[in-house]
Length: 296
Image (cartoon, rainbow, N blue to C red; front, side):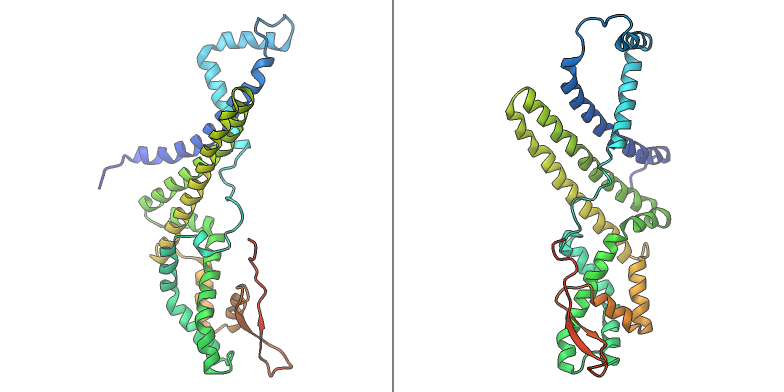
């Protein structure tokens, strides 16, 4: 195993956190300069004006001071225009948009004992009237529960990342954090790059619009990287490195035979017939569930 300095290991996360707003801010400032530069005077400003009071400060601090001020301003702009923490688009409508297909298969295998126990509880409580109905819906129910838990893990991502940082091996978390930082970096510079390309197209040549392919590609790569990091986080749950509240909640419901909770989970999935208590049908009838995530 390669040796890694403890000092370097502690500094790198901070550097990754700084580079995202700094790079984004520098790109925004460059676009602003290209737009505003023609309005700056070529000669020394007239005495008594605001710019005339700025020039002595520039001469006093020198080039180093000017560079430091630009970097500090860029950092502040990058923090204010913080796009790196915004999720890309809406919640994916399919599980394969949340995580790698192999990770979802691992998740279903990991949940298999609890899923089978949940199906058995519904069968024992007479939620499906006949063996034929039970056989037809048990597979659907297990798939529905797996999908529901996958979306719960998506919503639980921040909490899982914090648990990984606190409870798990440092190297595991540092690997995850490095990939998250790379995804954030790609997303953070995509928009200012697109704006910069537009400014150059308006002021230099319309051929610069072709540069929009770069931010588009960065967004695609950022989305792919986020999916990869989320899969890595869920694999940590499957490997019992960290615990998931949603999985623990479902597991407890399956073990305790909490039928209402198990049925409530099924009601979140499209196209699944679930039991529904009704005084007009001896306590049980089936209804078609309205898709909850349609168009997401």
